Amino acid sequence: MTDNELTYEVRGAIYDVYKTLGPGLLESVYEEALSFELQKRGFRVERQVEVPIMYQGNRLKTLLRLDMLVENQIIVELKSVEELQKVHYKQLLTYLRLMDKQVGLLVNFNCDNILSNIKRVIN
Image (cartoon, rainbow, N blue to C red; front, side, top):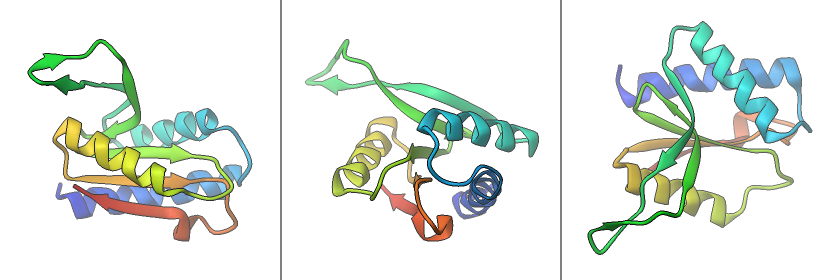
């Protein structure tokens, strides 16, 4: 599946989770629900994936974890905040770079319109 096809499918699952649960819950609730929804649709989902950090040829012991990795292809970073900030985009872009992935989705579930709160980020 291409990145475009997969992100389209993930966006549909995000919409269904939002339609069912609505805004205002904890990020962890949306993560679990979205993981369930994507797996139900036949996608392989990894949650809380460790992001390796290399510095001058050495792997740092500090742990970073991204929210979701779908089909080992698309990083999905979930938020439940008043408003997405520049740092959220930078965080996802850094995860994409460190994981050598091309496309990620940044999602804010704490909103009135989920479709305008799904942001595609390209490495």
